[in-house]
Image (cartoon, rainbow, N blue to C red; front, side):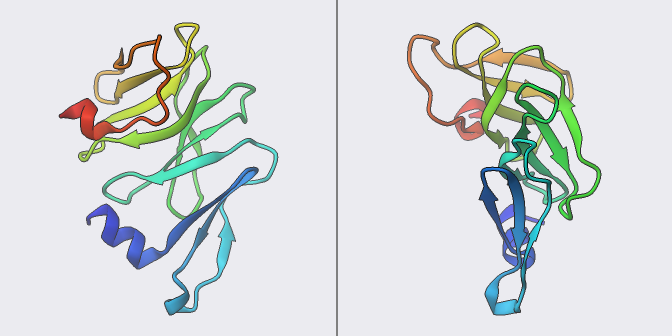
Length: 141
């Protein structure tokens, strides 16, 4: 199922500073439902392109890391452990096998791509130029 169709059929994602919420479209009479607990620093959620999971940044382990969970909020798990702060919007590639994200692992904010099949991480931005938001469209070009 295509990501846009999934979001349209299930609802839109509404973000709040302290928690991640999901909402069904008002045309379906849906209600807003919290998917994570306040105080964990969960933010900037996005669906994987196939709609099977949500990706989000979270500080629940003390530093910002990339997490994933089922679309209904179940089974939250850290996707990749890092000694750095991996934060900002996580942008999946169209096939969901690569994730673009910001991290301070080099001592400066840089955009990286994580290949989830191989577990490799590659910097793709210049650390001397601030990057405002990763996009896997350019990273996987």
